Length: 318
Image: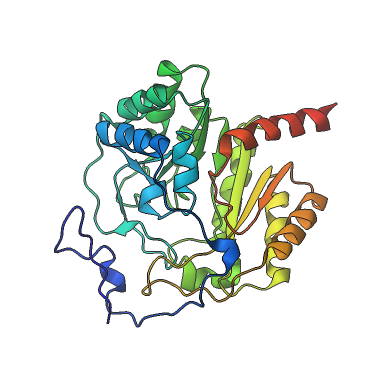
């Protein structure tokens, strides 16, 4: 039996204590189209040093993103605020689980400082789930947005938030801070929620995205799912319809990759031509932007995609 241990912050504490006693789940071997190069460039090292110097966490590292080498070489990092420990235990996620520490009041300033040092034209801010906080961390998100605006007025800001489940008024706090893009991922199709994302509620997430547009119609909204978790094609198409009913602008679809044998197994590696098919179908349903490929992730090429998103909205408005 494999035991997942966090050897970085505490060598004695399992990184995922809730998964330690689960049986191993074996995934099929990775196909050639999934493989990426190990990160070893100067740009990668520079980005890592700036992240470390400001005492920050990134979802790139914590979630084991396969695109970290490419993105960090370009000094594109997705900052993960409110600590490195999540209060939920999703079956797909490699972020550490447990009881988080108190919020760091200096973190919004430190994130803004790192954004300035990296010279980012577009930044993505995400977080762990903080069900222990009365507002789910909404005010901390707002403070981080305001700090970046003050330090880097020309930088556009994309946020990838938790669902703020049972946190009355939390969403309004975040939207009032005026992010340029509001992203909240559905992660999977409704039939897989109990096994893949048990702490969340599918239709609550749909309603969250719909409510963002009601509060501020100018904000771009975005959501994404993983495939390869046992979903059916018609279910993915239904997710597209549900997102369009909530007026979501941008859809991402990527391949699920198993972080460890204690996580949900990959049921299938979806070939590139099926991703291309999903992309074509999604555009016919009215999304302004669609990114669908095996290595697509929420914040991959986010800056370039934001420019395309603005152009697509302008084209529709003409």
